[in-house]
Image 1 (cartoon, rainbow, N blue to C red):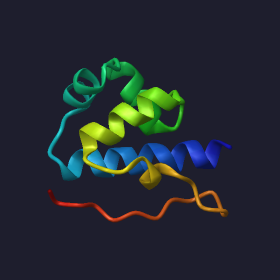
Image 2: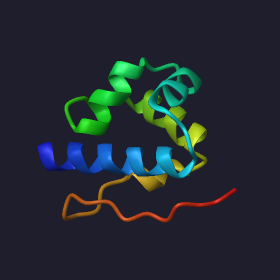
Image 3: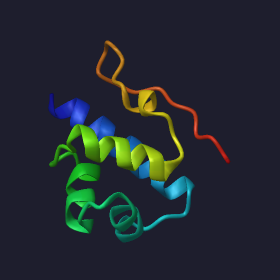
Image 4: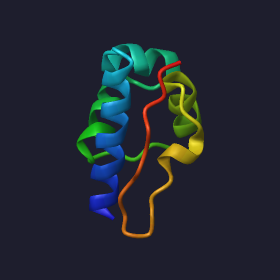
Length: 81
């Protein structure tokens, strides 16, 4: 489970940085505290379903982007909208 959290956190971080967003900006736009974004990206925190929906929207990604594959990792493509 910890590996999935770390993978999810890394994915969120990569997508956030690809859009040029700071943690604070992502958090504000998704109504999540910057400290929780930080914990999620480190793999120490777990977003709720609705937080994931909001982050996906802000990051310009479909929610399916955040679905773990069978091995626990994520595959994704960063869309440049």
